[in-house]
Length: 248
View 1 (cartoon, helix red, strand yellow):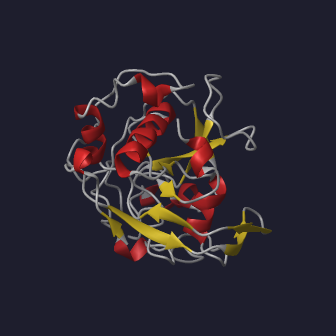
View 2 (cartoon, rainbow, N blue to C red; view 1 turned 90 degrees about the vertical axis):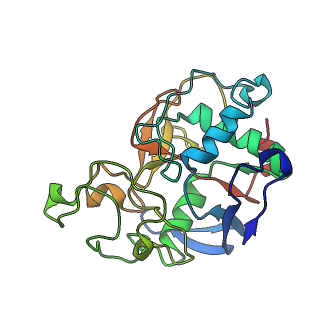
């Protein structure tokens, strides 16, 4: 479903939400887990959406930086409007989600690892969003590393450029293009709340720079919450656990 933005964010395209039905699913190495229904954005946040946050003064508004460290925005290496915004750190992604929640009138946030993996692996615990085997040309990665194929763009693409790589519910680019921030700390996954500790936060999904193993849906990566990197972006979820509590 597509939800139209509030007038104050009229410059933003509507967010295309994909329903991820609740129930049991397979997590990591075969563990059975359960989640309620939630919604995940079909696409990662694009440059045009993130720029709206900056242009509206959201980046400079202290309300959105409670318990997180503000830095200076860094321009995406590939600034085209419909490419994923990159060089956005975890703190900035949280501030953006708080600002956008205020504009939309409902809570949006980064996904938990469990939500991200459920969306990517489906109910059946597949290895990649599209199935159990890597398929050449299904994701923007460096296939030449493992002789998996010939794809080697060495840059991002517009979001949604690989529809054949969609998840079972239709979420796009969960493998490749950019790593995606999740709420959880890497070494202490039970901790999700914002803080100024500097503890590393989880990344999922792989990027244009990685090989097929890096884009497996159960693969975990991490970076410091203040790092701005050109192969890292983010997407949002709504109506999941902790929505009300997580607002700034």
